Amino acid sequence: MCQKDPSKRFVKLSATTSGINDVKEAVKVAKNESIMFKRKTVLFIDEIHRFNKLQQDFFLPHVEQGTITLIGATTENPSFQVNNALLSRCKVLVLTKHSLESLMKILESAVQKMRGSIIENSAEQKLHTGPCFLRGAIETLANLSDGDARVALNGLEMAINCFPANCAEAAIDEKQIASVFQKNPLLYDRNGEEHYNIISAFHKSIRGSDDTATLYWLARMLEGGEDPLYIGRRMIRAASEDIGMADSSALPKAVAAYQACHFIGMPECEINLAHMAVYLARAPKSVEIYKAYKSAKSTIANWKGPQPGVPIHLRNAPTKLMKELGYGKDYKYNPDFDEPIEQDYLPSVLKNIKFFPM
Image (cartoon, one colour):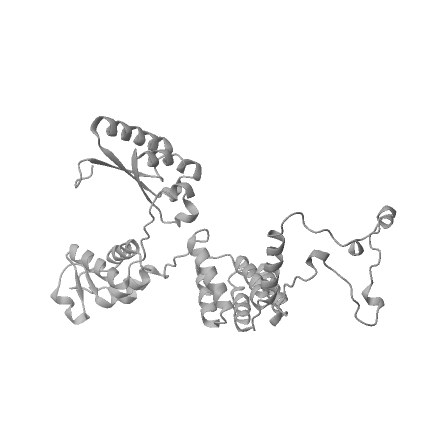
């Protein structure tokens, strides 16, 4: 029940433990509450992305009719995981990472609730009892938690369980905190939003000729467990899209880097990827082909009426009938001429079109 507003019921379900039948039951009760007691229901669904798109459709009529006020929580990007029709009827609130200052306050509060102490240096340790941390240890813990309060609090608990925490014995220091984590937890989901965010940053760093940023994002992906072949494919794309005619050797080199990853795998192929990524970042850039091909696609997509036919002189004539119909007639075979020849290679209606700047 909502304590601040008795006219509303608060119902909490989790998509990890509840099925669509539980949701149907909650909606059924909400209808009765609305009719009999004029009381509205706020339905909170944790991990709403665990319901598939078809199951999420069930909420639509009840949200529209006002039977329930829906609050959905998800750790995924709702643009990918929540039904567009449902998303359009909701207001999206983004909860960002905690800042280091915010995490420090959370950790300090947690230590106080455990009747512990945070000391500036080891000389103070005998003056306190209970769980004891050097301030540098708390700062290290905040830095390693990647803005996640849950990670920070779990790390705090693990440190207390793993090491003597009484100030009369020894305060927990930075090295002990680091050993609890063993490895900096990286926010990286190969199938989620961060996957797309980081590969986008990687590609744009190559385009911007920033070799340092390129290596940084590459390392973030590889250390987070990204498939090296996926990165290789994106570099093949960048070799044509962003380097293009400015350095035509970039494409075969990118393909070679992809093949190297395929042959030797991780972790050995990380240096192949780093080599190629820096090469692409430092290479001269040209988007001439990229823009020209977009213009060609746009011409076709926006053409009114049927697409123009292939000019008769450019058509192949493998059969007698096709020859009789004039296929290939008057075609000039370029190698037979010493001088450049005039010949149209586009339909007459496209004669003056240009995809490349003059």
